[in-house]
Image (cartoon, rainbow, N blue to C red; front, side):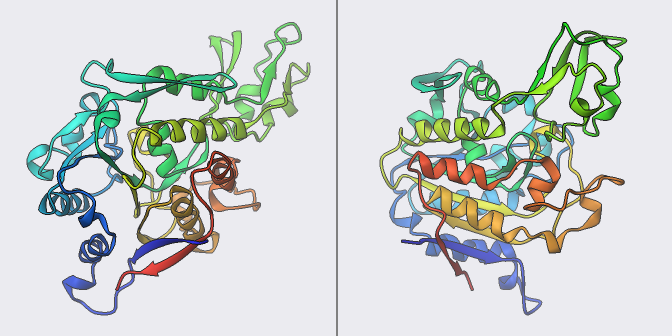
Length: 365
């Protein structure tokens, strides 16, 4: 059965405040059913607080609207993310005074407050659930939708799998990335592979093309340019690819969500300033497509699918991609940008039993 996804569109018909997105967001919250669920509960609002000179994270107007709504119905919300204080969220307006609730590190100020859960998926063995996430009665996944170098798409799943856990878990998930194998015995250190990469994803551990060959799979699109230009055939493909990373994120997401009682997780995704890169880069590039609106629902797979479907190649704003970059012409816009099919992430979420890709959009008037 299709999952219901609320949709507040950017489109408007009149120059009136109630036609704008913040007003529609208020109406969306009233239709969400959250008012009946939050009374007396501590509520972790998990969102990305950005970094550096990022300005594309969720606008404080929307955060304050959500906080005020939850408090008005008896909830006790707090904003949380990992590395909160070192990211200086106050520079993007994320302060207790502005938002009306605390802004806290989910693993504690020292990053050592967590609950370990054992899993068994390749190199992913530990899902260390952030202490404040684990202890909350309820969680609202408040995601800013954008592209992502490692998984093609950053939404609700990425917000949980990379933001509700410790460094150890993030490292184990990233260790699932791969696809390129370097043969040190074959390598002649000619250095031709380095400029062949259009995404600055490879390097040698020592200058002047010495040392070991390294690949940053966050940047890598698996274009195989480095492999193709290597005269010694020192770079080859192995049997695994970014799908392992996607499944690792799904396994991690399930472990985090399993700490909550049924019905105590809700998803809200903001589709404004949709950029090519994750907010953790500490910078904001131009939007890829025009602002779309806000989606909300109880099914993580359905809302992810609805968000991806709403981002269409035909709406591409050319300034959103680097000058001179040529898209592959194959697959979703995010796949053309990063070489990773975002729908694989949804298939992984379905496989671990977190929902369905079938959805019904209900437009908020």
